[in-house]
Amino acid sequence: MKILVLNCGSSSLKYQLIDMENETVLAKGLCERIAIEGSKLTHKVPGKEDFVIESAMPDHSVAVKLVFDALTDAEHGVVKTVDEIGAIGHRVLHAGPNITESCIVDEHVKDVIRSCFDLGPLHNPANLMGIEACEKVVPGKPNVAVFDTTFGMTLPEKAYYYAIPTEYYEKYGIRRYGFHGTSHAFVSKETIRFGGLDPEKAKVIVCHLGNGASVSASIGGKGVDTSMGLTPLEGLIMGTRSGDIDPAVVQFICNHENKTVDEVLNILNKKSGVLGLSGGVSSDFRDVENAANAGNHMAKVALDAFRYRVAKYIGAYAAAMNGVDAIAFTAGVGENDKLSRQIIIDEYLSFIGAKIDPERNNVRGKEALISADDSKVKVFLIPTNEELAIARDTLRLVEAQ
Ligand code: AMP
Image 1 (cartoon, rainbow, N blue to C red):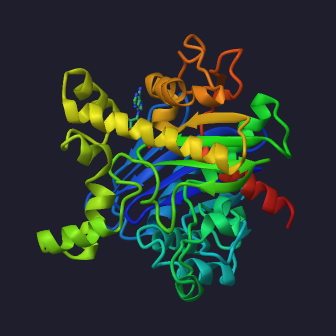
Image 2 (cartoon, rainbow, N blue to C red):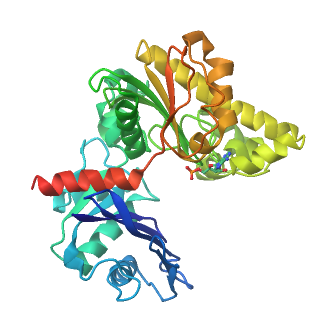
């Protein structure tokens, strides 16, 4: 079966068509500036030149229609008709506490996505627009929602409750949900498979280190803790997000800078992290590394703080599980930045017996064991593939229908 995977943002739409026979990408692309002047679709087929369509996209339905047109285009398409596409898998940010697994979209699922608009104000409305656009453009084609919050649904109460009055959980569902869940679920299972670990009992820590960054702990592929919280702001220092912070900082800045809570949260989400701490150098870790190498002190502090926080979470999660069999690095920094991997493991985690093999660590973007033979904890590089994870869940649910 061929599965179309959609990831809708408020003004963008990313897609991949995956042939599940051999899990290969037949085509992928991006619609940009939806509902903004200058909309553009870039359609990529492996081995061919990019196909670019500059055409008005007043809403997501028009964008989805253009995607199907590109996929079936006589010259640039990869299928003859839309009938060859068995189902559509949608990345959806937030399901609140009520949906704990990926599911085929029906009216109830759409209601739940809608009811979580205030928990995921930037993503959930766009995700729902994508689903409704597909219902309109290809009626009857099964739509599957794969939620970023699913991985966090197996967390025990001690890990997901905030120590605030329980009425806020009861009234509003305020708890830790965790994000990047599709990536954490995928990478933890791939780590178990690639590492030949016990599929039921393996204790795995996944470090998803990209522009957004989070760490998770899982046993047998099931999440037991994760560093992001009610929103993706909690946890690690990221490209532009502060991660963990004393909430009193918000009040202090509000009072002293005459700002609203919303304005300060915007600063914590968009102007902090390595961007803020480096004194505005960049949110891109490569730029921050270059600046640090050129002698910029705060760029070096930002990188040190980023790696230090990752190591602290790994240590905490080893304690949370009373042990760890494997640590996996993934996403942009995790897959490409060998120095960060080495510092995180060798400078902070030798006390649990983890040790990098420098030669094995000289690798990027592919599955690899990077720890030394005498390391007590196996360390891996495992590339994430959220689209494939979504496509696998979609196939499983559609076949079980
Ligand atoms: P992602 O959000 O997973 O796409 O990751 C994006 C981040 O990965 C950006 O901040 C990049 O700077 C970072 N990245 C990519 N390649 C490298 C590299 N070789 N060294 C350090 N960071 C990298």
